[in-house]
Image 1 (cartoon, rainbow, N blue to C red):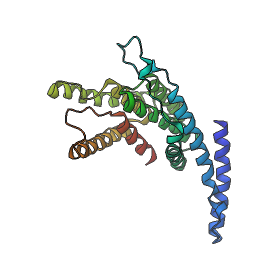
Image 2: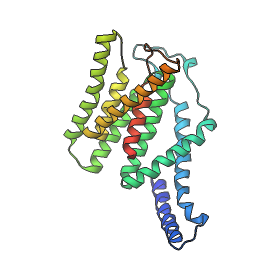
Image 3: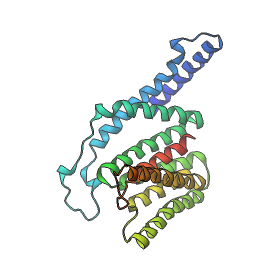
Image 4: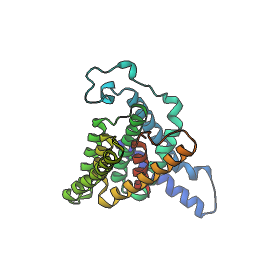
Length: 248
């Protein structure tokens, strides 16, 4: 955290220097150097993120009724293959987070985004959301409460609303389709995000998630790549909606 804060301070100096060059009518390469710390942070975070994902115990990706995990079930990500897009994405996120929040709040939300990436990869590759990731999000939610100072009760109600929305969706799915519409991991994820974001933001995330997943479903149906009986991994859509909410 200290290293990131030092890069942040360096970035402020470079940014002010760039502004002065622009005001003087001089467009120099040095005036854009303030972007470099974000690229460095994005690169380091991406490498750690991808490496840690490959080292997650296979037991994390198993259901509660699976007692003996099959090690051949584990899938490995090619770190170098995904390093560049993840670096650019995380650099972009951290840049805009700092533009909207204080340094400490931006750093906490940056960690939330990193965990959401892990959650999305887990749901895409294994169709499961590890409880350890949900717990980590709750811990970050507690830190956000301590940082901002609002009522713990307000965030607790937000968590209940976030989880209840998807419990309702799950109930409707069982009622009309006689099958699970969403997994319980999605319910836990929305509960944890409600604890972080607050009431109004979790409602926005729910609406945006529904919109994104519906558009994806329609596109998949038109392309004949999925059917109405298909179960979509919902965590990537929840994560995208949450990140959009953080950055706006």
